[in-house]
Amino acid sequence: MALSYSSNKLLLSLFCFISTVGFNLKAVIANSNTANPSATCNSKRRAILPPPYSDLSSLSCSLIWNQKFSFSFYQDGQNVTTIVLSGKHNHRWIGVGFSRNGSMVGSSAVVAWVEPNGVSGIRQYYLEDKIMSKVIPNKGNLKFTTARPVVVVHGDLLYMAFQLQFTASLAFQPILLATGSGNPYQNGSLPKHTNSTTTFIEFSTAHHLTAQPMSPDDLRKYHGVTAIIGWGVVTPAGLLVARYFRHLEPSWYYIHSSVQFVGFFVGIISISLGRNLYQKVGAIFIAHKFLGYTVFFLAGLEVCQFVGRPSSDSKRRQYWNFAHYWVGRIAMVLGVLNIFFGFYGVVAHDRAMRIGFGISFVTLLTATILLEARRRREDSIPEAMIDQPPVFQVIDKTSTTGHR
Ligand code: HEM
Ligand SMILES: *[C@@H]1O[C@H](CO)[C@@H](O)[C@H](O)[C@H]1NC(C)=O
Ligand SMILES: *[C@@H]1O[C@H](CO)[C@@H](O)[C@H](O)[C@H]1NC(C)=O
Ligand SMILES: *[C@@H]1O[C@H](CO)[C@@H](O)[C@H](O)[C@H]1NC(C)=O
Ligand SMILES: *[C@@H]1O[C@H](CO)[C@@H](O)[C@H](O)[C@H]1NC(C)=O
Image 1 (cartoon, helix red, strand yellow):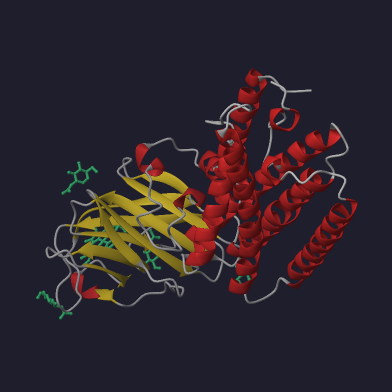
Image 2 (cartoon, protein in one colour; image 1 turned 180 degrees about the vertical axis):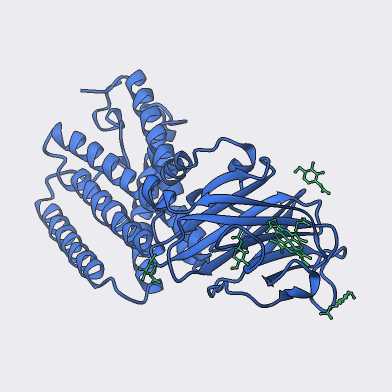
């Protein structure tokens, strides 16, 4: 029973659609959290700031001070608040202050500036009083975490990003904002602001209303589990079905297709999670990343296989099938190999995952050896390596029946 050409096309479109959705899953979820459609809140800032500030899609963002500044923040369960403020880079300094009652006196502020030679700085000030000598550099009650504060100028926007540890969680919090027209002096003193304002930010809403972004630990866990299921268990199992159960006409084909469909989709989710993980923790583990994308690319080739496939009576078809078969096998081997690489890169706390993968790996390997041995012994099925179905075959029914 051959599938028609148009249903092939339909399947392919569906598959590619689902792949794309799967790949961008996190981005879609994250963007829907950002209620404010303003340009500044939606700008692509991922590449601009280093971790832990790079994944701004997971921060709540609002436009403040006459919509001229975007204020992004995320408060985690440990009272650590990550803040990214961006605004036009036409001031000499920009300050963000944390005040108890909304007034400047008695509060502490983080001030960022850029020297005319392009060197940027960021420093805390204690605002003891409203005179320059009582605005004291490198003093204050804000506690930075180990994450380094950063100042980045990108186009005509200045970004200042920092992470603070508070003793209590922030709720409805007065935030001071000020901009100055002169750089800090050599001795650290700050020239007075030309403009200042007080605004209120509801820090606790992000907790309750929007989904919390996944922590790197959770990301790592789900990335690992989906990679093992997708690339380590389901797609290899689908290959076994195609290679050793072809006497079960025609159900082997449908089992095989749907198994590969599920496996590839789960695998794509794992790659998507992996991408977010790299963004969160910074890339240090290049080989794993490279191999992951290679597997994704090869698997994608398999999925979109019939594009440019020669017709079944063409001479080139045999070579094409052969290449196709080996691309699938290589993708599978690299996928499994990359799981080992992934474990190699993670030092701690995933015993259960290692054991689970170990068991499934040994099971699949044993099954392969036994089935291969039986197949060779029986020798009743003619050896037809050239016409083996591919790992990610979805619609390649015609190649096995010769019917078109
Ligand atoms: C040398 C540095 C500073 C001096 C001399 C200074 C001085 C003053 C003075 C005299 C005022 C009264 C209103 C006015 O004259 O505009 C004021 C208000 C204000 N300042 Fe500053 N300031 C300094 C730094 C900062 C910084 C770093 C921030 C926050 C990031 C800040 C935030 C504010 C705010 C929000 C107000 C208005 C609310 C209030 O009066 O409490 N100031 N400042
Ligand atoms: C806010 O608190 C500071 C001391 O922390 C005090 O000097 C100031 O007068 C207070 N301002 C208002 C408006 O209550
Ligand atoms: C965070 O703040 C809450 C009060 O808002 C406090 O009960 C809790 O102990 C704080 N946690 C940490 C880790 O500082
Ligand atoms: C720092 O330098 C500026 C200008 O050079 C001066 O006005 C200010 O009084 C100095 N501040 C301190 C604390 O020495
Ligand atoms: C202060 O801000 C207002 C509006 O944000 C702007 O119109 C004004 O020019 C600013 N003043 C200075 C001295 O920068």
